[in-house]
Amino acid sequence: MDILNKHTFHIPVLGLGYTLDTPINVAPLGISSVISLVDDRLMEQMREFYCEKFDMPFKAISEKAEDFRAKRITSYLNMVDDIVSKKVSDLKKAAHEKSEELEKYFDMLPDFSTIKEKFSLSEKSRQLREELGNWIQEHLPVGDIDVNIMTKLDKVNTKNGEELPIEYNDAHAALRGFANSQLNSSLVLSAGMSPRLYSYLEKFKDFFPDINGQLKKKIILKVSDFRSALVQGKMLAAKGLWVSEYRIESGVNCGGHAFPTNGVLFGPILDEFKKNRDKLLETCKGVYETALAKKEITAPNEVPSIKVTAQGGVGTNEEHNLLMEHYQMDGVGWGTPFMLVPEAVSIDKETLDLLKNAKEKDLYFSGLSPLGVPFNSVKWASMSRQRLENASNGKHGMPCTKQFLKYNTEYTEKPICTASTQYKNKKLAELNEQNLSEEAFQTAYDTITEKECLCVGLGISLLESKGIEVGPTDKVTVCPGPNLAYFSNEASLKEMVDHIYGRINLLDKRHRPHMFTKELSMYLDIFKKRVESFLLKPDDAKEKKQLTAFQKNITDGVNYYFDLFKEKKKEVVTEIEQLIARYPILKNEL
Image 1 (cartoon, one colour):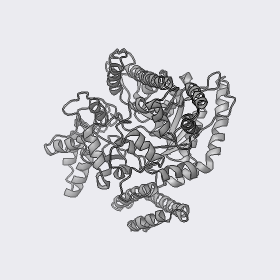
Image 2 (cartoon, helix red, strand yellow; image 1 turned 180 degrees about the horizontal axis):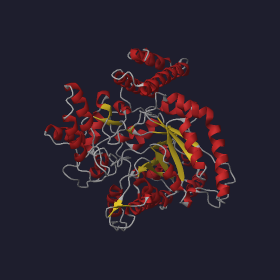
Image 3 (cartoon, helix red, strand yellow; image 1 turned 135 degrees about the horizontal axis):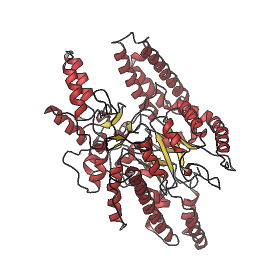
Image 4 (cartoon, one colour; image 1 turned 90 degrees about the vertical axis):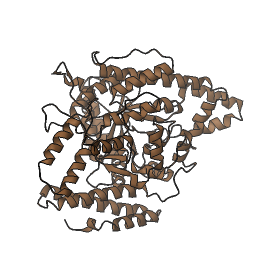
């Protein structure tokens, strides 16, 4: 990455709707962001909204149309690209004159940016202003319009009661929608490995180098550790597919679904990438070139490059610089803080106010997700309030209208969603027959009833923010990480960018733990709960082995942090020591 000209941060995907139109707002200003490709219905609604706003032709794509999901996604992405291109074109037209938007563009760049310096100097030199204007026409950096596919969300679809071929599965159709679009950007693959989806990538020429050795569509892998990156990178390279970026995500310290490791902490994971980056590049490069030769595709003349970026819980310029300088990252993802920036993300006022007022006690590691994966959330979002009210009236679950998370076959031949009325009623009926103790019953009851309809909940805020009417039972689910507790005010886009680069401070005056300490505290909570559960069934040899490894990984990580911070940031060492002291169970023999 050319850090002299571009931003050193990106905005990751946030839920299904919160960043669905973020590129329209930030890409013309040089900031990259990520769109979720889960909900094609939401994209169709947003396409209609923006076509009307920008006076563009709109023709609805019906669910009765052949391959409607892929076509909707392609049409939405093309529209976003067209709007961004128009905004960038308008920006370039103002290159030789004073323009508020152009000044905003350069003002937000990092202070070390060479083009920012030239822009400042051009005020004093007519010749330099002319040169800068010409450079802008050809080279002005535009933010990437990247897209995200959760590989697990690959539901089988049917037509007239018959299962459709695998290429019509949800993730496959989303991939096709992106591949057929005009975008020159990246596909972010998250939530684990999917060999059949990886194989499907081979069907689209934009993922392979053209005659000039360029990739129109690139691949970004979201990974939790180095081994996963190496395995998946080699797997894709063997198909002639190059992973251009490995995006390391803190296991539990980001918004939305969390994928905790078995106690391996973020710092040691970053350190392993730093030490083995060349190994990753060289290993994949050889496999990649061999695969291209077999496909009779000319390999690029230049050695393919890789970026390594990180995200999850970053909240200060000091932490941003630690990732960029000490761990030599090529960029940093800032997610949760942007939930307070309506200029960048789409969020309704009620939910925005809820997030502004949320503190540590309100942000929690929940069981809301029907996928059974831990989910970061905040208490008292409107969906949760409705769910609790309905439960008190004996009504459980919701009608499964969008059906993206239908996976459970515990009671039915065809998959259903664990947040649905159908599933919860069956599960609760079974629970009532088990004659459990009051405490055991309540625990099981809470686990069953906690599941929420994420398909609806994660998109409603987007619609409400645009003044689009929603149904009376359509409520909001929101997915901030715990880092939100230390940001309590709505911010403009420029203010948040200035905070990232250390030009201002948007944090509360209350103490904020270091990002590594905050992640550690969440892992210690997970460890404590798992040990307590294990003690009820101490003969579980597999769980004992995993907990022993978990315990060692945490201990090794803590020692790593002590070595890292003992000289330059002793207050973090003290913070970790005080935290560890609150978890004596960590030192117990299993």
